[in-house]
Amino acid sequence: MLKKRCLFCDEIVPVKPEGEYDRFIGCSCAPGEAYNLLRDSYEPINSFPHPKKREILHVISGHIRELTDCDEQVALSAEDLEGIVNSSDIPVTIEDKGTRLLQYLYRHSEAPGEPVIIQPLSKNYNLTYSPNLQELVYIIDKLGAEDLLIREGMSFQLTEKGWREAAAGAGGKKLKPCSLLISSEEDWGTDWLDKLLPKIEQYGYLPRLFAHKETKNCEKYSLEAIADSKLVIADLTGQSPEVYFAAGYALGMNIPVIWTVNRGDADNLLVNMKEIRPIVWDTTEELAVILQQRLGL
Image (cartoon, rainbow, N blue to C red; front, side, top):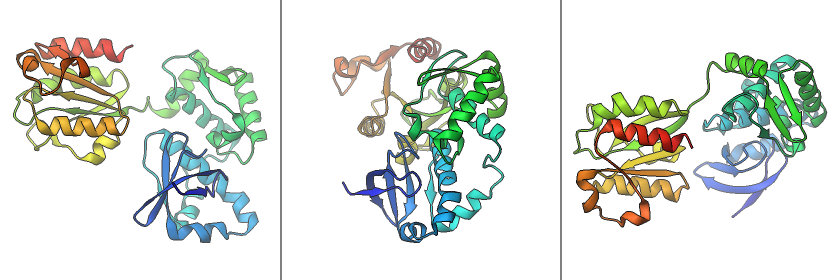
């Protein structure tokens, strides 16, 4: 795969062409994720005067990092940069930058005191939109002195006070997208909406109910929605080829899939039960309990 230097964090990473854009994969701007940059914007940005680069590039890196960490897609062009840098959403003060670090720890933990590893710090100062490592370390020390976080080497923990402050600033924990796939022919939609989706949301997911055809209770799925999911629950009741296909697509994207099937169809599956180990359920109430146990692990 072609490799190229990210203009915002200076790392050389794989680049995948996507139409008019290049997709930069796994740099410090988007660890484990990716962002898109208009191909024709690369050289104009690279040609910025050095004072302008020092002023804005680290801000763009922080912007990409925060959005991709919140599971948002990022596509940029040279014309977008000034607007981003001058946006009121960009933290400017040390206090605001510290709040972004607290919110990052909040998104990556389930409770106060749960450790979050940030390693190495030298590749993570964009978490606070900082221009250098020194500012990040200063912010960490300041938050520690204010009893908002505890640092032990590369391990960071929110205190009870820090957790409350982060939760208030974040407006609640961001939910991860989750796709529930069911057959268009099965009449489970209402039960799933009323009994399953609220339970799944309790475990940090934003569930959407999909079928191959749009119905009263279900949206029509798209491969884009599946690809954006952090979890797929595929119900094989009704033996829908579209459910098999969409779930297989998710597996190909390395997205975790939980298979389920109503007991009445369990003996008629088109695949080996031992290979996919589906949850066999009789009622939606029973399925809700089992899913809660699985998601709570």
